[in-house]
Length: 130
Image (cartoon, rainbow, N blue to C red):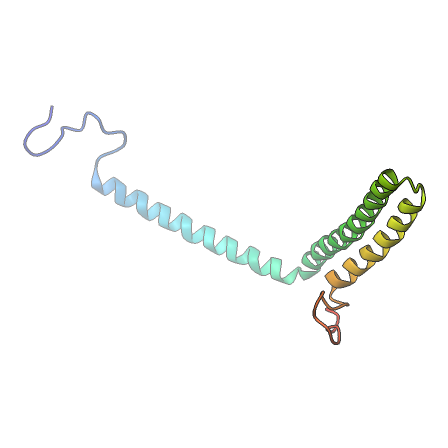
């Protein structure tokens, strides 16, 4: 039962003694410092292994550029096929759409790689990234 000083501790879920909590806090603090030291050593290893990071970035860039190209071709073929169905000009709409999509895909790849200026930005293309 509770008295005027506070509850009697029957509903406590853990140890209620203060000195044991201080010992636990010291143990947690020690473990936290060890974890920070371990993470710091791993971060320097990761910075030294830049080749792995470049390879992952290269794969990501290759996936991005290939998807840009494929999207251009697919959209061109799709629009050509729709024009063929609506106008009855088969297979010329599909052929023209394929060629236009191929050109648009190459232009998308060049823009994504930074080798061609974006639409509406005339002038010289920026230097390629190394």
